[in-house]
Image (cartoon, rainbow, N blue to C red; front, side, top):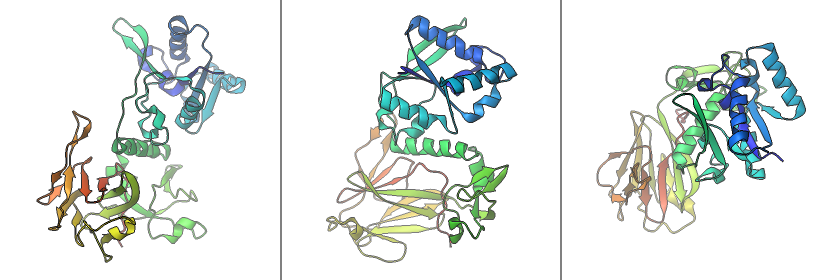
Length: 339
C-alpha cells in the first residue's frame, strides 16, 4: 500500500530545487530523500503525472527512467493526473506531496476542504535549505471552486486564460460536421478544444466555423435552500425577471414547487450591462435582500434591502422570500442564447 502520492510535475519542474532541464529527476530525488530522512524512513510512494511531462525530461537517460518507472508500476502516467491522484488519496488515505491546492477539484472531492493532515509541500529557504511542511487546506467557496475548475478545463482543452479575452475563446463557434450531434445547435454551448493547433468541436474533434465575437455574458445560479435548481445564461443587453407567472424573459417561481406567496409577480429584474449583472427590485411587496461577501470574514454580511439598481459583485447573493437565492457562477466562458 502506498502511503505517499507525489505530484510529479509539480516537483520535477520546480527550478528552486536545482537541476538544469525543464523537468529534472535530481529535484525529485532530493525531495524524496528528504522525506525519508525526516518524515518517514519506510515510506512507500507512488508518482503520478500527466502524460506530457515525459517530453520535458531533457536526456534519453531521464526519459528511459520514466519508462522504467511506468513499467514497474511506480509511476502512473495519465492524460490528466490530478483526478487520478485525488481519487487514490480519497480511497487510500495516503498523504499527498504537491504545491497544488486542487481548488478546481473540490466540488467533486469535498473532503479536501479544511483537510489538515494529508497534504504536504516542500519549500527552499535562504541558503538553499530544504524543508517539507504540512499544508492545511483552507475552505473556499463555490465561486472560487467553479472558476478554478474552469481554468483546469481550459488547460486540458489546450487554451490559456488570455484566450478568453483576445484569443480563440473570444469567439463563438458552430460544428458543421453533419454526423456530429453538436451540429444540431446553432452555436456550441460548451468550450471547444484545440486539435493540432486548430479550434475543434469537443464531440467529433473536427474543425469548427467561427460565428462572430462572443458577447459579454454571465451565468446565474438559482438555489432553493442552498440546492441548485437552475442555471440561466444572459448576454450583454439581455434581462430576466423573476416572479410569479410565465412569460418572455421571465423565470416563473412556480417552478419551485414550494410556497411562493411572498414573491411578487414582477419581483426582481436581472440585466447584463457592460458584462456586469445589475439587479433591480421591481417594487416587490416583500423586498429583495442583497448579501455582500466579506473577504476578511470569509462570509456573507447580513442581507440589506435592495433599494436601487445595483451592480452585483462576483460573490454577492440576492435573497428572495422563501429561501430562493440568486448567485453568479464563477464560469467565464459563457455562450448565451443571442439568436
